[in-house]
Length: 497
Ligand SMILES: Cc1cc2nc3c(=O)[nH]c(=O)nc-3n(C[C@H](O)[C@H](O)[C@H](O)COP(=O)(O)OP(=O)(O)OC[C@H]3O[C@@H](n4cnc5c(N)ncnc54)[C@H](O)[C@@H]3O)c2cc1C
View (cartoon, helix red, strand yellow):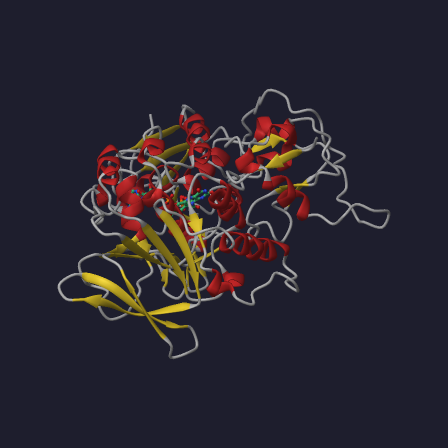
């Protein structure tokens, strides 16, 4: 029975390199790697060796015969990614260079050329992109890293973003802990660059600075009434239930029967799931205890997740939808909203599978327990109310037909955006630090010793593992600049002893 990748896939691609028969795709070298909703095992090529299981940092790979009921659909999802095997089917070549994975004895490599004996690198932020960059840099024995992290806990959104009930995804922290144990890296927590220490000083004391500060702000929704009490961003709610210190006071008003979430990406689903979950189930997760107490007293019966466009344009990923449909959450779609909708003729198999699942949900009875309702094709016009929100007025997208939904809590979840960093050039259109493949640029000119990675380099997209390839690209340029003697020499005495 072949192995199967399940929803906890972080896209890290360690499994791809461990696989002896090249049956896991897309690989980081394939064009759809950054766009794919997860990685997939080809069941007709998998030899069931289990090498990928040991390599996966979040325990997302399971032998087919051990799939839980909740994850059973992933067998079809993995298989559905590949054409039916047949004599004319072009298969991916088996890798000739493969050997059994051994204990990871990674001998540090020595950088050549003009690299100094101690190459001092500062990384700003300790999220996934920072930790993947550090992992790659530490393969070279001249490298000394200081990580500056403004919070008192490391690992960015891997700690403060990933939902508490996505327990296996959160185990990525074990991998980052391992990186942090290397004697050539130190992590300074509670140290904000730009406040506790200046970027200028860091530049003066290191050969290179790698900015990995993430994209921490919400894309704003600009409609009348958005400033009313009872309206807040999904980001603030995620921070609140994950114990992020910036959002300790962002307690949502749970004394209402209905909450509306505007936007339907994975973050919208995370929040809707947590709001409707049985608190007893959350008890055993890492959820913030104050948030859990508040959720125990919640009056919310329905979380309405509303998208502007139709089901074939749903922003959430297929693995997240499967987790919702087959997991403990109660989910419903009003059949009237899907009248005439079919997956027939949709060429993209992932989109077709999402539409089929939504149709399946529309055939379920409306739940009696607190539930999530997925709604499509409504554009928000105004948050209604006086001093506080009482509902949202929508129009059916592309028409004048109005719909008013009563709700005492309105959450916006339409995406994230990077913030400018004083002293670094910013690309306002993209919401990123201006860069070419991770080298920070002013116009077309690279700024010596300045690099960027992660969400603030490419924008807020992809999975935790997407940052690995992204950071690999930046690190490659940083190291080749070191070997070419293109890095500035620190002016003050070394900081790393
Ligand atoms: C709500 C949510 C849920 C998610 N769930 C999943 C999931 O289940 N699975 C998955 O694969 N991906 C998930 N993701 C995506 C994943 O979290 C991101 O791809 C990843 O965290 C981006 O990494 P990053 O290092 O660029 O940024 P971040 O993770 O945001 O890290 C940035 C770090 O920089 C620090 N920092 C910022 N400015 C400064 C400064 N001036 N000085 C010092 N430190 C600073 C911040 O405190 C933070 O720790 C989720 C994202 C969100 C928002």
